[in-house]
Length: 157
Ligand SMILES: [Zn+2]
Ligand SMILES: [Zn+2]
Image 1: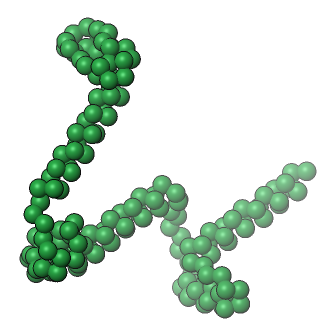
Image 2 (image 1 turned 60 degrees about the horizontal axis):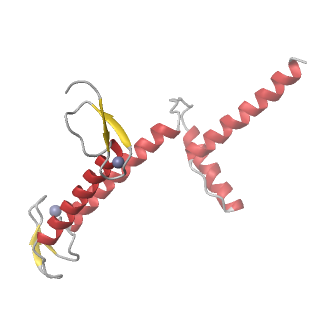
């Protein structure tokens, strides 16, 4: 490591600077090559794995249960696979929710939730439109915001 020197990338031919004594590839091409090496490694590894006959029995490394091999890429038993999938799904859901929504903790009078659910059910029968309690409250808030807006506008005239 030392001062920055200028090199010419062996791959794309662009000039780039680096503090290394010697550098063959620019940042982008280095990343590209790393990615390709990783992919080649994964493919090689996959090809080296013993192929198990479909329908044969294997032991799940997670729970130790025997399971029937249904596809070559199957690593764990059906139960463990489902567990993983649900965990992954709920994690992405939580992240999505945190990114997309504000969460406000609101206390309602006892029975309000049942009233809302009842109304939603009736509304669904009448219109065919399904709605979650969350959606119902969101819409109520939106409606209030709009109502307030029009009041504020007319009062400040
Ligand atoms: Zn390059
Ligand atoms: Zn298992």
